[in-house]
Length: 290
Image (cartoon, rainbow, N blue to C red; front, top):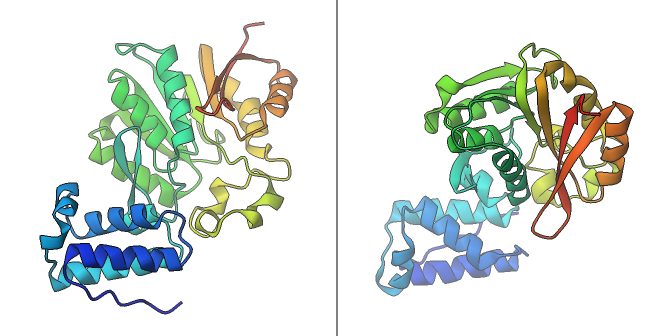
């Protein structure tokens, strides 16, 4: 798809042209995406948009905006263009090697915070950490906790380390390259994970923004979407202190299958946490409570 040239120098005109460009390309939220991209890449504020007819942009700003709008026009997600995504009120670096943080995953963080107190001291493991957004958010809300970030991707671990450094949490996190718990010997009070849970035959049907820009390794859960759950649930009891809890994010409609896996491995389903739509989004699992 050839690039589109955006030549207007006043913010109001450029914004209008950017919106039309994205709308013509079939982008779902052209006005919002154009506003966010223009604001971030040109170093503007929301106040600038209120006075957009009088804000004149220089050549460098126009070139940056044009480049960003063309990337979005070709289907690249806003987060991947900007290099960050907001999660739980904080910005996290993202790359093509990491799954974008999603609002549904905030339910997982909420579940752990509900089970712990602000002053609690505990050890936490995040399996398939990606950006580290789950682990680092919990550590930010629980300053006495410490964590281990696990991922099979070295590139993803580098992103998580960057985010930990930005949040001043490097001294509270250990990073381990491992296929789930295969190379993890530590024991924990809490283990969390948002594992890949999309069935393999659904992957080709995902939107191009997801299919082409999120790592397939973080999406593909195997034939029934359960491969990672089977491994995690079967492994993690070896890595718990007594009465440890496992928190897992689920895909829509997966709860019955997860219940069967929990029973198969002689564990206990302690709680189910719904998202804002009432869909079972997170389960809390324990071992040895029967």
